[in-house]
Length: 146
Image (cartoon, rainbow, N blue to C red; front, side):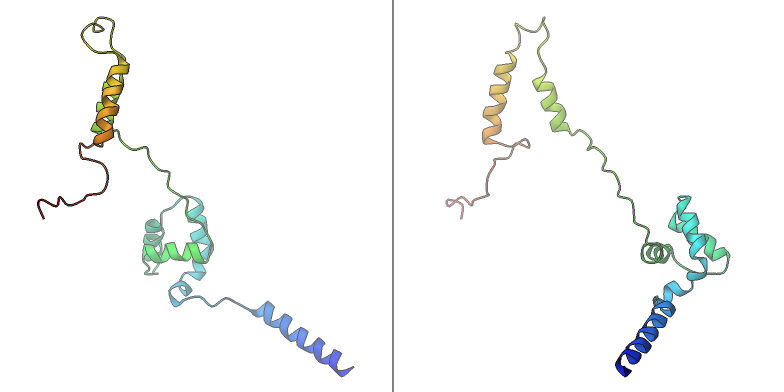
């Protein structure tokens, strides 16, 4: 019977410890805790970390924008949106290939070879060299020059 009373007392102590538990934050975040709701509200309005740091500096809290960012990620648990990748700009090689593979005009049909001939010629040159004009494959030393 004393075991059950002791277990009950231990359970109550544990429950009280759970209720009173507060996560220990690094010292750099302790100064920002009173402003947690305001920072979360500013981030909801898409305010930058630099803007939030400037506003805090005006109120007397000297903190860097990096610390504000870390605070938002650690305490507010706000995730950073991924940046969308931009399409790459067309390079000169891509433009050259695009002009090579265009179909010939009706007036130029007698002057230029057909598309299949141009493609065959490009395949033959691409088989030995890459788009940059260098040969493909590993760079092996020439034994005559060693």
